[in-house]
Image (cartoon, rainbow, N blue to C red; front, side):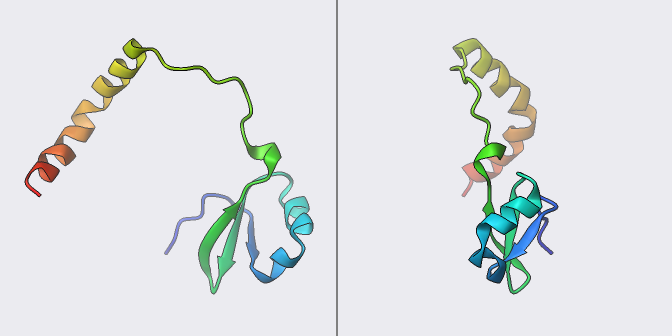
Length: 82
């Protein structure tokens, strides 16, 4: 069973009128289904973050890597043998 990333769904047939699908979803992303399987997500422009982004400093990147080390290390060790 596939986990949907949004509570709004539509079928491929309903996409013949995408404006109605987006209107019904209220500006939120919509999962597109074909034969009960997710084939795509339709994300309206209003749902995309257009805020100002900044570049992370080296210290911030190193700190984030250090926080994830305990989680990532077993995977890296496993892949080393492959």
